[in-house]
Figure 1 (spheres, rainbow, N blue to C red):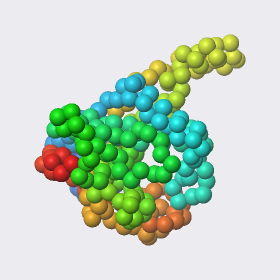
Figure 2 (cartoon, rainbow, N blue to C red; figure 1 turned 120 degrees about the vertical axis):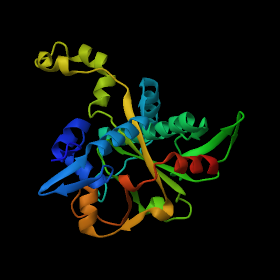
Figure 3 (cartoon, rainbow, N blue to C red; figure 1 turned 180 degrees about the vertical axis):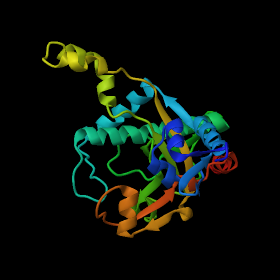
Figure 4 (cartoon, rainbow, N blue to C red; figure 1 turned 90 degrees about the vertical axis):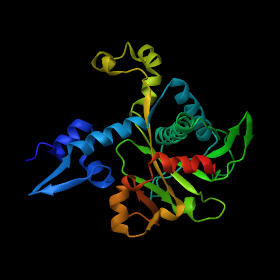
Length: 280
């Protein structure tokens, strides 16, 4: 075995990624050597460095802004359904999805500021109807103007491999965007517990099982958010095959088509991002 190649099991351990991410995302080239699936060490190092440059750690103030928006949406009475089902999500699921989505938008805002010294305006207001674009303004010399491109920002979990969009996000003239940006948010499953740690300690300290888990109640830590890349609308692939959609969505018997782009096929170069910045 050449020294510059290692098995994917070691790749997964060293990079902290899953097998499905490695194989589905197409972000790190892999190939078979005999019966073993291998990766090049140099490719691993390059991916790790590039990912590090695209990650923004969002703090408690950012989280609070997103949490406030999520609660405003929830108490407005809006509830969403799970992908391809009629099952209503419960409050925790709704809040998590809204917080994750807004964190992704803030990460993109920070990305444009860091890379191009560009100030973009996001919409954190609650509207009666869905607002089609996530970037609602560009600030130039202290003056806010409308963007020249329609930008939609989608957030997913840190180990997910696809940009996935419903037909309502892509096909209607009043909803479609010119550019779709994918972000990945490494938000812990217990994030709601972390921000309530002090209150939980007070509430539960005299309860029967408190001593068994009190050391596991963690406090809030900055949330890593990755600006993965983007695709133009015409680069998205429409998928309506049920079997293929089941694999992509991780659900059984999905209904309706989706527009999809594998994360490793998104545009990620600084030159491509610069075109978006200039077009905005």
